Length: 265
Image (cartoon, rainbow, N blue to C red; front, side):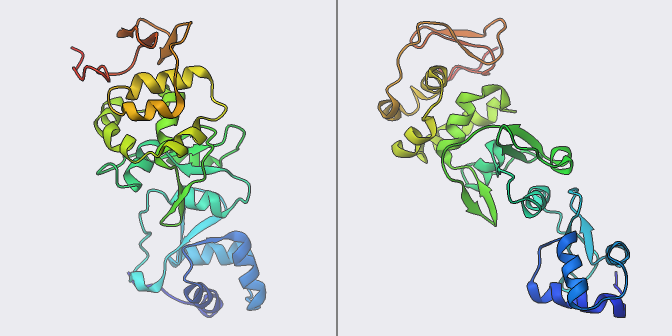
């Protein structure tokens, strides 16, 4: 579809093209309007840019996707991670990163990620409504710095591994996780694992040991887990699917034992 560039929009679109903008905030549009002495008031400018297909909604209020002329039509990128990009562009304080299954896919440890992208935010963060509505948002406090991939912060392998042991109920598909667990542990370095485990409860180390003991026994020496005196739950406190005497773990959610590798019928 062809798009019109009215005189009132021309300077703004030109500026965005020169910037090679991916996202644009309402505040930035206001600055461009003032710089170019554009006549329409800011609400009307935003309305006209939307109407002509030069900007598109990201789901996050006040942040828009710029649709450049090279796209040959008013077609948004369709990027499923766009709400996270928008949320980070609109805030200097939001601590958020691609996590869990989506992070595994971006790190090329898995072939594909979940249909609903997964994002972790710090426990006290206040993610915008658009991010929560369009992505699966979980709360987790990570220790390691993130890896920048395609302009987005992504959890490192050690962060993902500790995350699933620390908060096993936040994993959407344990079957998929168990399939890629060997590749995930191979990507983890001992130093990174130690740093991500820093300050965690003993139960986290115990669950991690139960999860990887037969897959990556070499990593156990990294954090030297001990058998817990009290029962450690792997999943919600309900009737267990299996009990592991080595670690005193009651497993209520895994579809198979991580050591036996047998599917539970």
